Length: 193
Image (cartoon, rainbow, N blue to C red; front, side):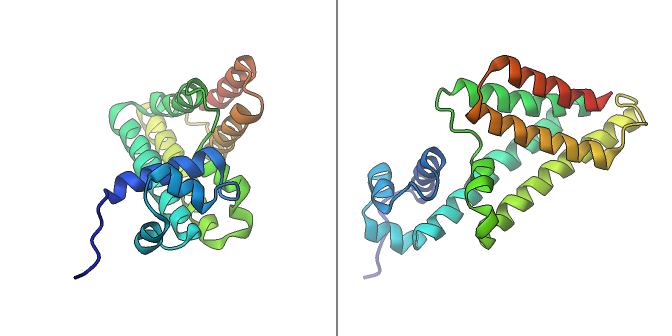
């Protein structure tokens, strides 16, 4: 009889994602993953593979379920200027008010693993490119609607907004000072003028 999973694969992957997100890749052991999921080591290996494969699956889930959905929702629900502002506010409020100070899983991963892990680096780079593309689309739409001045240089501004967003997320972990974070946010949004 073939082996049958007695657990919800997506639910377990969410627990894995949250464990890696809270602790980082290197500081998370397989035992930590067993403890956080309640699934035995053999079942985790049989379903997802080794620790690295589990991490990549968790990072892809985060990217799909959080980053992609958030950008799509903002683009669909708000005008260009407001969509950009809300993205910054989502990070500022959600990450700083959660109390865990765990930051953004993609950004944390960019700092910890992307420089020396090709698979992870590809995922992180793609996500960052997609955020930059979101900013560029919003800037173009805003310029077409007359909401953002035509003088704003789309490529430079979208890259600057990406850098500001990543910087904001890093500062939220290392220096979670509200005044500092608000000034970074305000400076980023001035790029829209």
